[in-house]
Amino acid sequence: MTTITRNYTVDGMTCGHCKASVEEEIGGITGVTSVDAELSTGTVTVTGEDLDDSTVADAVAEAGYSIRS
Image (cartoon, rainbow, N blue to C red; front, side, top):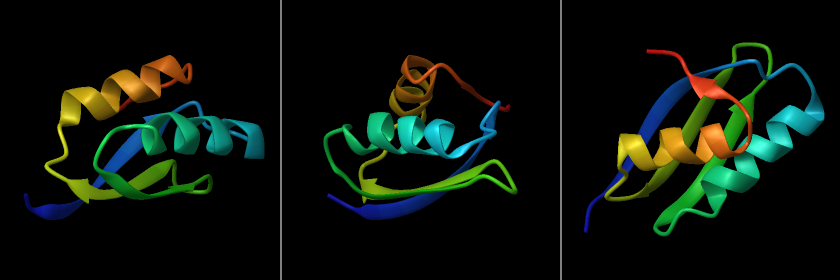
């Protein structure tokens, strides 16, 4: 397995609760080792093994947000 880091732009994160929800959902993905959401930029940095973009997008959607294409 390969550890990689990817950045995603998430629409709609405006507060600490938003940030926590997104980090919690992405952090629950098997293989994810680190998640850091930045409210000021709407960017989420995810580190993990064999990350799958669609799985991350699904987790973000579960938190109630979407990844900007």
